[in-house]
Length: 305
Length: 315
Image 1 (tube, each protein chain N blue to C red):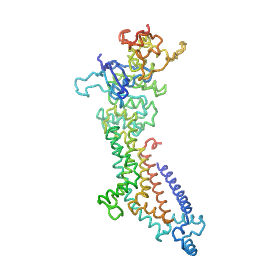
Image 2 (image 1 turned 90 degrees about the vertical axis):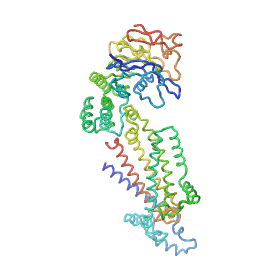
Image 3 (image 1 turned 135 degrees about the horizontal axis):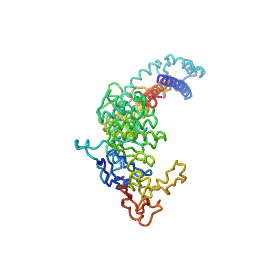
Image 4 (image 1 turned 60 degrees about the vertical axis):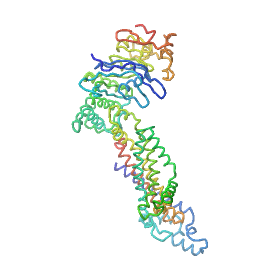
């Protein structure tokens, strides 16, 4: 178990190094930051001064080594846009994004898992068809569009909730709902199909033949088996929430990592964009590591080998 | 001796396709006796068991006939029916992969006998030892995937014993096992039957298994029982051409027996396109016009020996 976690952690670090390198190269290839940041009428001297200030006049290899060496010390450079430390710029956005994604994740589990279980238990019934119709609807609307629909309905039309900003908890309701509904639909669909698959296994028929009560069949016999593939899906959902932040946060002008990343890439603020991609990658790596560990904990076939 | 189980004119259907899987079969079983159900794959042997155990799968229903158990006059309701336990063809997939053997046995002991904690653990160990699994204490912590198919079948049998059944239904209990394991499991079933006095329904397509364990056998073909007889009678004097053909296609290991096994021509018809009359007539060398018109009703061949055939094989 310890060996397994160490091996996975080592792999996670490799992924991070690879990402740093890739992001560094891709962002450098995507255009000259001096030209993006400064106006077209800037004098060549000013351009050269800008490049010298940020080390952009050195070779790309030198820039890369400097970047990695500094990043290891927690120094991700200075934002091109406002001259503040990238570390500060990015870290003050992290709690904002978590304030949306963590409640949304919990909510999508609280809605999606029971809905999927109920649909699977009453397979082919009106309940099942109703739940699944709702899930398909929730799943097929792109989440940024759903966000706009919510703004129109609750902020513009009903005027009960604010449409943008993050000053009070009420501002979080619409973005969290947007996130949660989409992901609850995905969780419900997968929970249903996984549970139906497990309920069709011979050991469930055998347990029923033994007279095990239905509630115990679901809770003790079926769900522990369904949990194994579910963990993988929930990993995707958690990762999707962070990726979705890039789409959903700007809709609500929510000052989290998603909005920050969109701003940084559109203004060519390389140090900030770079640090954010690295942070997203680190989140994904942590999520995957958690999934791997939970998988081993839940699945005796892997645990005992 | 009293009849433990009487099945009369049992009909099992797939209502959505109006297809009869079992078409009016009758048999009975006395307490402590063993009934063998034999026939090719798809003839309705397993479905008969599921119907008796009241565990027909989704979409399959009993639509006719009766299944009667001898009731315990001191009890009422379902509790008065005899306890039935069942073991299955593929033991490993019939055991929940996330639970230990100990959980499986102890929860059954709690359900059936109200045993808890240490009492349940000790009884589970005793059951494992009884079915021939040594180092029982450490095995209770094992998972099904750590056991061989034969060991898992022993676990299933131990689990069935936890219910103290008056009737054990064994659906192809040795089909998925290798030959040495088959012999051991059959031996174990024989012993347990003698020890507990439980009745046994054993399903197999292997006449050898039936010959070894059963007192009485019913030969099934396309959802019908075509012959019932004491096992010795059936093997020596099969009356139905299908029963005869099943015996003839068994290979013999007797070096003096030079006759090669004879395969049955053709294949089992599909349930939704059964031939009219006797379902076996297209594959039968004795078939006449009569056989294509109406399914023959059972006629007595000997004492407690019946066959549904217009032209039974002479003894």
